Image 1: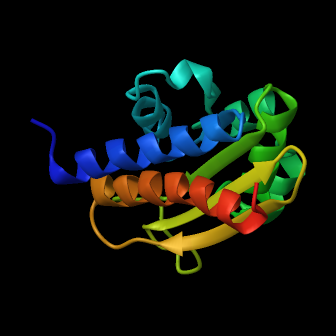
Image 2: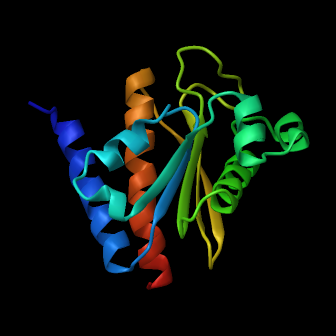
Length: 169
């Protein structure tokens, strides 16, 4: 039996699927700290092949560069966990997919890896429309690794719905 949190993710992913399908749009995902969890939740939805194009799990900096075209200079100057990197991840996923909308995430899920500027729980998310803007935001989630990742998946999927609400598509 699914936990309430996992049931909520399933319901949220179902809403994302309905929003994409009714607008005849497709989604691609570029993930780092969530390690494919967003793509897993999306593909749990029957019929997701009609609106989900592909996912990129780019956990290492090299993967971000090789698979998504994130510039070495961006990682060096801003860090892999930054608004600039997730925006480049989103742009790269758009260029390397057939999707109309991309979401990208990178963060520090812990328990190690944080810094004073970017403590454990810091996550950057980005959403990009092929025919519209790219948006990036910083979030901070308290809790253990699983909680940080779960909140990231939730906010990433909610952001897809918000993109449609903001752009009246």
